[in-house]
Image (cartoon, rainbow, N blue to C red; front, side, top):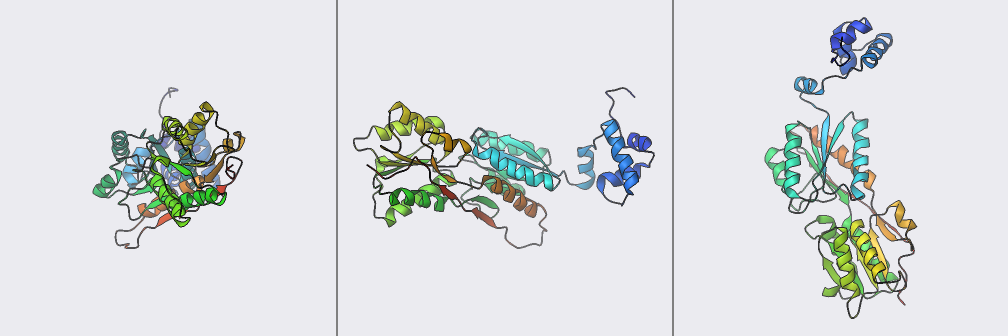
Length: 340
C-alpha cells in the first residue's frame, strides 16, 4: 500500500490476525477482549499509525467527546491556567478540547460559537467578552454551556468563578488595615462581572470603615495594558494623589507599573499597590507585588466537571445545576506598607 494511504480497521485486523469486530471491541470497549489479542491490536495500530475516524464514530454514537473553550484574551496569563485545568480534567474523562480566542470582540465570539456548534462539540466553556450574546445563544439552542470567570448577569446556574466580591473586600481591608485613607481603584470594565464584583467588595470595605470613595480615585475603563498606563498617569497627576491603589487585573497592573516608573514613584514609600491574579513573576518585581490569588487551575477543572454534568443530565432531571464560587488568597509582599 502507498506510504500516504489511509489505513482502515480491516488493515489493522489483517495485521493483528483478528477479526474487524475484535478491533472494534478494542477501540470501543464494548466487548471484553483477551489481553493477548488486545496487545496484538494495539501493536498493529501503532505499526500502521492507525487512528479511528472520529467523525464517523460520532455519527454512529451521537457523541464526539469534544468540548469547546472560548476565552476573551489568550495573552492574559489568567486564561491559559484556566484552560490547562479544564484540559487536564477533559483528558482524564476521554475528551478533547478545541480552544478559541474571541479577542474581546463579541462578533468574533459569536463566530467561534457557530463554528463549534457546526463541529458538533458536546458543550462549551465560555469566558465572555463585554457585550456578549453567548447566554442568549445558549438559551435559544438549549446547548450545554458553563460560564467561567466572566459571568452573564442573567445566568442563574452553570457558572464557575472566584468570589470576586470577597476578593475586592479582602484587598481593600488590607490597605485600610495598614492605615491608608486615600485609596484609589482602577476597576477595569464594569460590564464584566469580575471587575464589577471587585468594585462592590471595595465599596463595602470602604463604607464599613467610614472612608470616602472619591470620584477622581475611581477609574473604570477597559482591561488592557494601555488603560492601566493612562489610569496611572491620571491618578498620579491629581493635586492630592492616593496613597494606595487597587488594580483589578494583571494587564492593568502592568500598565500601572509602567506609569509609576515613568513618574519615578517609589513603591510602597509613595504609593502602596495591590493587584489581582498572582503569578510567579510577581515575587520577582522590585518590590515584589502584593496580590489576590485565584485558583485558576481548579476553576478550569471544576468548570469541566460541571459541564459534563450538564451534558449528561437527563431531560427529566429537575435538579438545579450549581454555581461554584472559589475562595481567593491574599498574598502580602513588599508593594504594600503603611503610608508615610
